[in-house]
Every structure is written in structure tokens, then in C-alpha cells.
Amino acid sequence: MTSRGRRNQGEITLARAISKFGIASRTQAAAMVREGRVAVDGSIVRSPDRWVNPLSNEIQVDGKRIRRASPVYLAMHKPIGVVTTRSDEKGRKTIYHLLPPERQWMFPIGRLDKETSGLLLLTNDSRFGEMVTNPLGEIPKTYSVTVDRPLRDVDRRALESRLTLADGTRLLPAEVTPSIDNPLVFEMTIVEGKNRQIRRMCEHLGYVVISLQRIRIGLISLGRLNVGEVRPLSREERSGILSSFAIGE
Image (cartoon, rainbow, N blue to C red):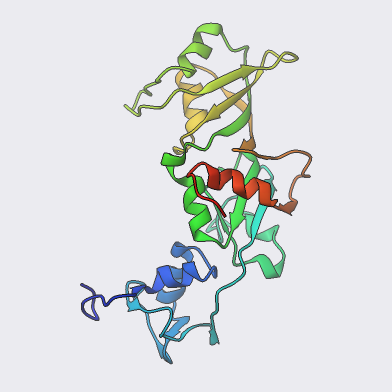
């Protein structure tokens, strides 16, 4: 039940409808609705939970009727010091400062904290975004980690076990590959995405993380993408995500 009554067949919430059109993420769409920027059949609606039928209701954002956007999939090399939000109350630079005007409707798939750099995926395809972040897909994310002292074998084995943090958070085993060139550097691959997970894992074992960079998500690699730049994902890269769910394009 909502303020308008019972849901009818074919209806979804207004925020979800905007998201499915590829205009914004569901969170961003809900904010647009509350700000009075969205109209349904000519009338401003301020409830993101209003039931609508995308096939029969005319939905407008900022006075323009929305239509399903062509799906876009991007990889960004997020710099250190940039936050993964649309706006920041502290006035810090966000990933949207790095996107051209025609890409401002994109939304990030997951997050990287301000001090973490590397591979960040963006899209306007909510279904694809949900696949990347869905724990059932167990899509591996690989990071290059630099710590303040060489990683001991006993601590590597602890990271590769079911580590339990001091606050009781239980984690799945990680895969750790030490660098052959630098004893302070190793790669860590995880299939979860808990808040500041790798930093917390290292801190739990008494290490200070000096730098952290995500270098791979599934088959998608950061490669030689320059800091602050974006590139489109290839069909093969997108298919690699879909194959985790045994779904073909």
C-alpha cells in the first residue's frame, strides 16, 4: 500500500521507473522526486514510492519527458582525493567532475573511499549494476595493497582464512599474492564489498595501509587507463560479468 492505494499490475515505484529508464540511480531518482523535479502525467509528484506504469504514464524530469536511454558502460581510473558521490557537503571533488556533461546521468557501481584509487565502473543500466554488486555472483575484485612493513606468512594465511574482525564482522577468505619485487606490496582479491574492508583487514592484523588501488573487477582490468580518465567497456568485458550469473546478452 502507498498514499495512492494498492499497486496495479505492471506498476513499479516512480524512483525505480526513473532508474530503469537509465536516467539516474534509484537513490538519485528518489532525490529528484523529493526536490519536485518530476511530474507524472503533468502533475508534480514528491513521493518516490508513487506507483506508476512506465508504459502508460508520462514521466517528466525537469520538464522533459524521459525515454529509455541507450545503455552505457564505463571504466574510470578514480584518483586519490576524489569522492564517489554526486555532491559533497565538504566541497570535495567528486567523480562527476571527471565526467563530460552528457555522462552526468551515470551512476557508480559500488564505491571507492576518498583515499583509494583505481578501477571504478559506471553505468546507466541498473540491472548490470545490480549484477556487479550482487554477492551471489561472487565477482572477484583485486586490489594492489602497500603496507608499512613486510607481510608475514602467518598474517597472509590469516587473510586467506575466514577472518573475524574485532567488531565481530565475519569475512570470506581473500586471495593474497605477494609482490616478487617489493615486500611491502601484495595483491588481494575479495568477493565481498564491505565498507573499507581491505583497510580494516590489514589494520586488524596490525598493518598500516600506505596505498590502496583497485586494479581489477572480474575480467575488467584497470590496465593503462590514465588517472582521471574513462573508457567504454568492451562487449567481452560486459559478457564476463553476465556469465557470472549464467545469463547471455
